[in-house]
Image 1 (cartoon, rainbow, N blue to C red):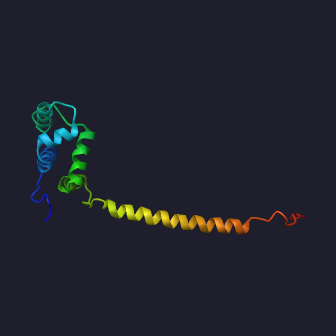
Image 2 (image 1 turned 45 degrees about the vertical axis):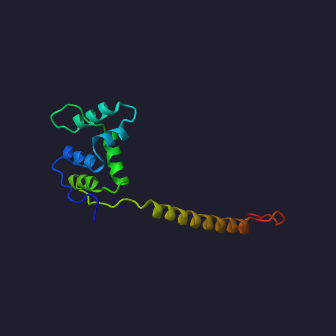
Image 3 (image 1 turned 135 degrees about the vertical axis):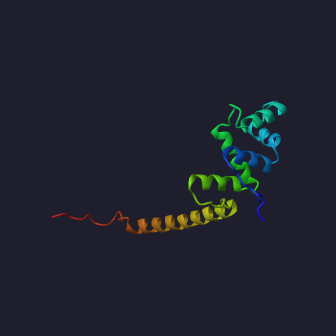
Length: 136
């Protein structure tokens, strides 16, 4: 069962508010966004940013950090909601272990190919004692 079952956003700020709730609330998320700010001030600031009646807004980097935190913690509904709003199909997160394995396989394949090319190049290299070709 998805960890974010029941996610149902009405608008962008609602999506972000629900994402913040999934991540443990404004105090937790504000600490991740602004670790050097005063703990009380940063939670209040985040709440103001998520209030449609306030002028304070999150920046793009802060929005992406919230989405990255959701991905890290297995909450994919906020990103899928954005996919739907933008006209994309929801996609699954990359399985980093499998991605690492894919990269290792690709490196191994490229190493084998490089060795094969080096052997071919060595075989095609003219020997120093071979007579020079005469062009007519």
